[in-house]
Length: 138
Image (cartoon, rainbow, N blue to C red):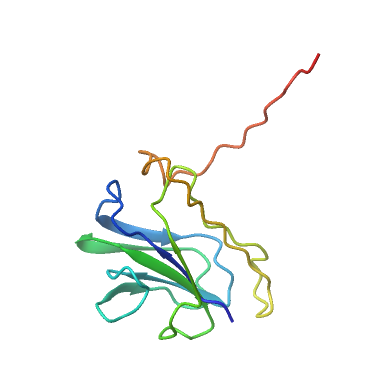
């Protein structure tokens, strides 16, 4: 069982959040959002999604500084992360999952960009457009 943590240490462009959301989370997984940079509850967690909640949103009553978030399996909410990736989020940041079925044995893949090319773009939460690029080689 893998518990993946993305930490956001000293990311100048990462602003306090008024809401959080997740999409296409496999049915046997959960997402936890923390105020600490370690995906540990030594400080405080802000929200834990329910296992089986594939898509969701949570609005905060006041802005919260999210400094890390973790994806985990089943009900292991208190488990420490097994892998941590320190990275400031860029416009290319996406966490994607594969195999979003209700089977507990589904495979999943998370891809996080760790490029140091700056911070968030203004539309970082918008879906990427479906585009096709045609290249003519002569």
